[in-house]
Length: 551
Ligand SMILES: Nc1ncnc2c1ncn2[C@@H]1O[C@H](COP(=O)(O)OP(=O)(O)O)[C@@H](O)[C@H]1O
Ligand SMILES: C=C(OP(=O)(O)O)C(=O)O
Ligand SMILES: [K+]
Ligand SMILES: [Mg+2]
Image 1 (cartoon, rainbow, N blue to C red):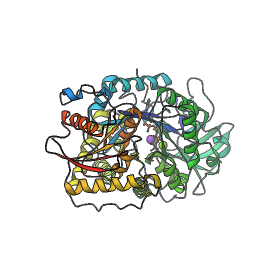
Image 2 (image 1 turned 90 degrees about the vertical axis):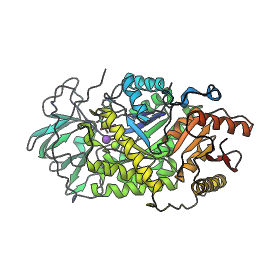
Image 3 (image 1 turned 90 degrees about the horizontal axis):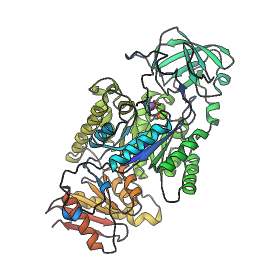
């Protein structure tokens, strides 16, 4: 497959992802795909800065309203007028993004995912057809209010000869052929180069170049999964000049972006971001193209260049994804955990939501329980207080998508509880953000969160017009849940990606007292707060902190 964009629909929203240089696959059924896994050794001594044949890979995170699910509390009279989109909420702090694929695209499956804790649905535009993408978006919408083939991995055996080709094959690929969607491939690669699939899934040596075909011998057997990322190495160093010149957004990406704007997705996730420039370009494009919608732009951190320009990229974006899949193919695997922690901390400091993605529960693509190591990895991401965790193949084409989601949910709940109960953590202190218009709100939020913690408050309530005040509060990672009220549906949907925010759409009147009363009765009716609870209330228009005893 060539370029693609990924959208996610969150169960309140959707993402979009960048286009990566990917290997295209033989039509289904041609190359056979045994289901067992091959053990691979990862050679990390060849650890020089890497870049891959991957170009950009535009992922789109798209957010739709929160699923309208049967409410656990009978709506009371006060809440009858409440918009349906508010749906059912739990108070889990860590948000869960699920990639939607053949395993989860049906209405029933999507509904089950929503009920199981999915906060954002993601569609990877690398896979599937436009109509399929549209139907998924529609179904997510409907919940808020055929299947694609996936059996496409290829097993490489030791010493087998394969042809990597940039030719476009109309129907059936010749035997032992892999299509590469990076046009410069045959020119850039040299006889003797080592080709590494997905950071070590399999390795090849380049034997011969024949026009657009590159003959390679498998030197380290393994698996080729759809959308695999190729890197090539010469004399133990990654070849990267060419890649640096490739555009982050291809023309196919731009068409996918138009599609996302037309469909009203909530997020675009841009793959293989190198600098803030592409983010800024996309932002101005969105602003020019869609006057009313305000699609958030997520930068996927998965290249060496993006690590070099990390701070400017985070500043320019509305959120960040630690895309550990491709990242692990670009830097030595043993560096991925510390890089993840660094990105999570930086995003927290700059109050941008951060998603930890890829291979969280990889073994659950095939097995109904995770490995202990996977549980430890997910726990660590929750302990770091990342805003969101993301499932890829586990939910898109795995055999146990719902089980995988429930594993994420239970690990998150357990770790969040451990965090709240214990004295395990030191509070993070932040330097001031220093955007002067926000400094008052920043101080208010810091103070309100601290006050809520000290008083042992049951909830924080925030009125937020743009979502900014709510994200400042989320950044403090307070102990109690944060109920965020906004009159804007799109602001509400985007808040679904932020740690601890439980967003509601509510028409706000000029009468502060009556706003507060209706929020409180809404939360009471849903069983989220009760009489006698202590609630700390802040608003971006009032700039005061109130402590209320719920009547
Ligand atoms: N829309 C889809 N249709 C079919 N398969 C999909 C779809 N989305 C995802 N998948 C499957 O799930 C896997 C993991 O998803 P993702 O991480 O988004 O893609 P990739 O592996 O291309 O980076 C894909 O490799 C693919 O096999
Ligand atoms: C999330 C990632 O991107 P994609 O799934 O598009 O490869 C990743 O590389 O980890
Ligand atoms: K991936
Ligand atoms: Mg990637």
